[in-house]
Image (cartoon, rainbow, N blue to C red):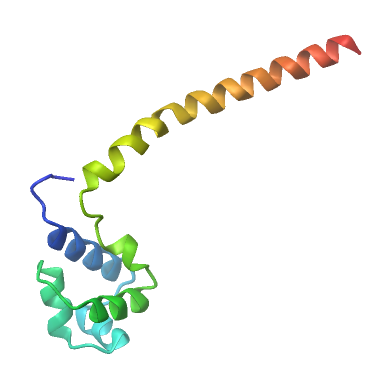
Amino acid sequence: MDSNITQAQTLGLNVREARQALGWSASELAAKASIDVDVVTKLERSHVCSNGELQQISRALGIPVSILKPAAHKEENTSLPSKRLKWAPTIITAGFILLLIKLMIASLLQ
């Protein structure tokens, strides 16, 4: 995602995409969340809403706020884990190969 996109823009895009994936209009989401449709449309256009309104939208969509809302300082939070995750497939593959070798040796010894 473009680094110039703000957290409010990302939140708005996430809410819009989730709503559209469910096939709902903004007014349908507002009705299901028991909030005014203006809150939904403003949020989707990168305006801020209250935490309570965001909770209601989250519940209506069936998606946790933590998924809808982008993490603050995303680069700082994910830089180290992402480096670790790059090695995960290699480690899993190496473990699988060692297991296969062990099984082959065990079958040869029988």
